[in-house]
Image (cartoon, rainbow, N blue to C red):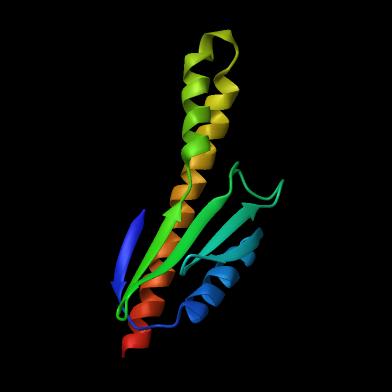
Length: 126
C-alpha cells in the first residue's frame, strides 16, 4: 500500500522510527539508499512470527513538502494460500494454513505500521 503525506519531516527521522518499529517486533532490518529514496527490507526472524516473507518499505520525497511511504508484503503468502487451496485434496491444505496465517499477521502489522507513521508525521506538524 502506498500513501502520500504532506510533510517536510526528515526522511532520516522517519527511517529511524521504521527501524525501531521492526526491530522491536523481532525483524532484522536492512536499508539502502537508491535513486533519491530509502528502501527498507524487514526480514522476520525464524520461529518468532508466522510471517513467511520479507516486508519492504520505501520512503521517497516527491516534492519539498510531500513524502511517499510504501509498504509491500503479502505476495508470497497469497501465492502459498492459493497453492494450498488448489492442492487441498492431495494433502496441500497445510500450505493454505501457512499462507493464511502469514497474511493475517502481515495485515495486523501493516495496521500498526500506518498508525505509527501517521501519528508520528502529524505530531511533527504541531
